[in-house]
Length: 290
Image 1: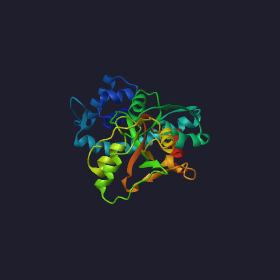
Image 2: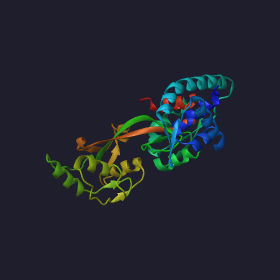
Image 3: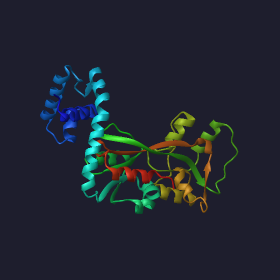
Image 4: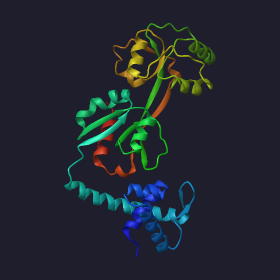
């Protein structure tokens, strides 16, 4: 008769495509995890995975078994955790990783709604996901979905980026797309980074080529970029939420609104934490519209 722990091990191997990663998540040794899988394969009478040098690929028998077992195992685990958390004190701190600007606009105003304390870390998507991978963060807001074993993603929102100039900036009438591209290339630019983030997106999506722009100033902070544009230092690309917060007093304007681009943001968290109600509640609070 199959052991319930064999089923749990099989589910984790299936989700993570790896015996070693499944063993790490379950706090087991790799040989013990392999024994669980071998015992279950003997019980069902067939291989559940094809072993390759890079990952475990489920067989058709493995896919069928997963579709049958996953809802049942997850339901049992949730019921068990419900009993556990009913008698265990709530987590006192949630560790959050985010870009500085997003935190300032979308998380900081909602801190009083959190049911726990928080520790925040700022950084790029890549650096924060690496810290999450090492279990030093619980929740990351990221614009990139990197394939990291044991990490899951959930869509947070879609942000819009537009070209922004000082309100008094003079723009000649232009109907032709090529003329707009030439005129924009000749302007004085402020960029978030030397690699021209979001400026490249606009050029690639609308002009179908790489931008030939040398920024006058590189300022890796969206709020400070906004201030520099307001002060007349040049034009730049900003998310609309930066402009919305100061709409009534803003001294900037959007150039060629049809040239905007969209960017998806995601929550990233460890698969082993997807049952934590506190994490889900904080995700829901952050996702709420102001």
